Length: 259
Image (cartoon, rainbow, N blue to C red; front, top):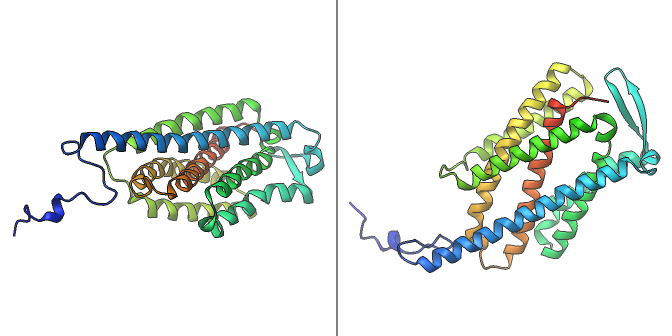
């Protein structure tokens, strides 16, 4: 039977976008709210990335760096040997990530903001080792390549009419495989494996950038006008921050020249 007269088909569903033909002012209000919401996410994410970069650069060039890491020469180039403090610095992002996994669901928006900035600082301290392992030009090239790629992929994820929600499970499985392969390569180093891991890592986090952008855009209709909106901004910024950081790391491993 045709259901053209079914009231449920014509009713405005909770959280759905107002139809342009029915409520123009509602549609305009929704679009403006969505732009502000996404802009807040991008502002937090960009600020976090810049904070990480500044902390990494300052710490790498400070006397404090020598208290945590020693520079060593290996057959592959210049490397670092962390002491106990160095290991604590390198593992600090994981400690904060545990908070996001187990405590963020009950945290206030203010607490999440503090955790986000602490996470950015911890990553900056950990990434300071890159300045002793890769040339400055390699780091700059990888950073701008990641920025350009992220901008294009995020814009596509925001504007595309294609539903890419089905990518999620595939990308998560790819991340798990990437972690397993990285652990194996850490114990049994292989140049060919490192190259493959870098290429796959770039592809996975390129896909996650587009996927997360569309997901955050679609989530707005559920948090719009609710107390959860502020928390959603921080969670969204963290997702895109991690996408960018990982995209940068794998591009650096793929394109970078070691000291």
